[in-house]
Image 1 (cartoon, rainbow, N blue to C red):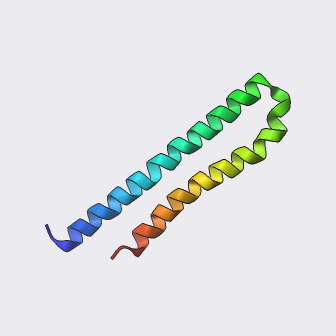
Image 2 (cartoon, one colour; image 1 turned 90 degrees about the horizontal axis):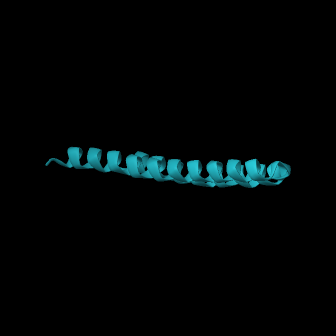
Amino acid sequence: MEHESIVTLAKGFTMAIGGIFPAFAIGKIVSNAMESIGRNPESAGKLFVPMLLGAAFAEAIAIYALVVVFTLK
């Protein structure tokens, strides 16, 4: 295999793995928050900000993967 094709494969795997796990994490965060709000509707105000922060931190991992892909040559 040539160097360019190995780098292209590495970029593809980095984005695939770096994107799928944060997607699952965000889905789990939001699912659990919605379930919690469904059980106790008064908790919606208390759960909204931590849910958004958790989703933002999980999304940051995907952005780190994107930055790694841009730095690979």
